[in-house]
Length: 224
Image (cartoon, rainbow, N blue to C red):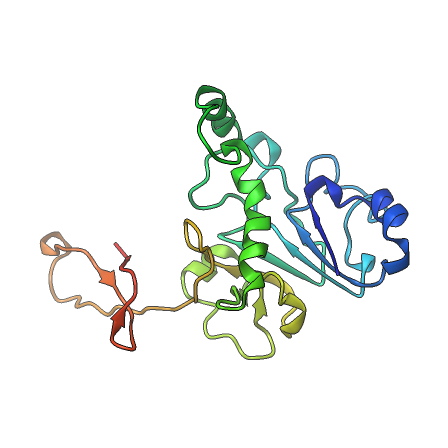
């Protein structure tokens, strides 16, 4: 198994360093987008680089908008956590860089690279199988958030991260994560029915959801 992050996912490097295992399982963490994404498959990551190639896209936004990773699907299965462009709890690349300069003494791994580096954090979280990062095939992240891709049949779902090759799914997969560690969370679709008999102007309040298991409540999720 070969695990590579960003610019280290490079054709010449892989052929030189890992030629003898070039047909093994590869897990690629937010492969570099700028100057690589639109190149021929001989110059960038591609599913022909291994017998099984899974990819986590965590910062696939365009470079001008602060993206460092690739957006296009490149593997047998491509995961797009939180839409794959920017990550929850992370600043924009350029805003993060300014913050890093101002607060350079603040502990952390750099706000400017937060979105890009989130891919490897997702992967390390997935090694201990308490949560398998369930992911769903869907036409878009917007449709995923709208609940249009639930439920998922057993032969189409995927598990992002370390156990990706043990799930039957393939193609483009979407999922949501938590804002902070631990990032992994189970995915649920919650349907709320409301009455249409009253004018919208008099509707008040907020909707919160909590799950009960073994007489213990989960954290509260705010839906409005």
